[in-house]
Length: 212
Image (cartoon, rainbow, N blue to C red; front, side, top):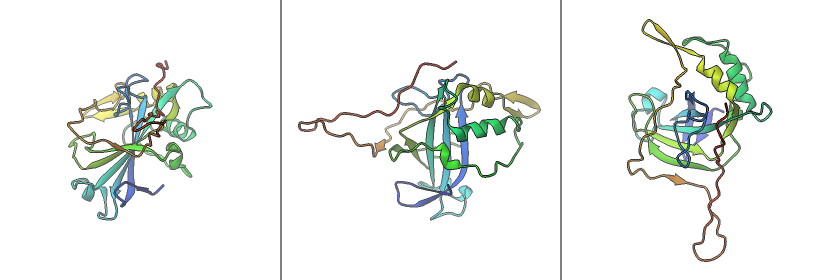
């Protein structure tokens, strides 16, 4: 999965994938659906390769970056859990410290993305400092399923700050910010059910009870 095509009809090259989690299983995503959070959020960070040669060059320019967000919901079922995410969390046990690295041969990155052609999009910012306002966000309208135990595995990862080693037990997700009058757009169709301007909304998202 080298490239993503965003709504601006330009080619974006994948540069990085980030996983955001929280300290509890139902509060880890950086986006909310109908005011509710999901257990985790995967962010596929891409730069506009039609105009720039790297992420460093594109992140300071409007429309230079597109981030595809995939929400992840905790499930009790091992069979339902996303197989690619399972591979990642199993590998994470081998690299518990910040700065560790390991190769994952033949990993199918596309398997982390749910099968859907629908999304919500808006112009926003990075969620880490300096929070540059150069990002086109695309939030896919279907989540993947992951196991609650996999979130526990990620919380055991260690990060280093100065001379202090700290666990990610509190997560790494940024608190939700107001929209500040941003326009939120979507390609999700709301089919008519009869009558002039009579539209029925179709929701793919539904947040279940907390998985402990």
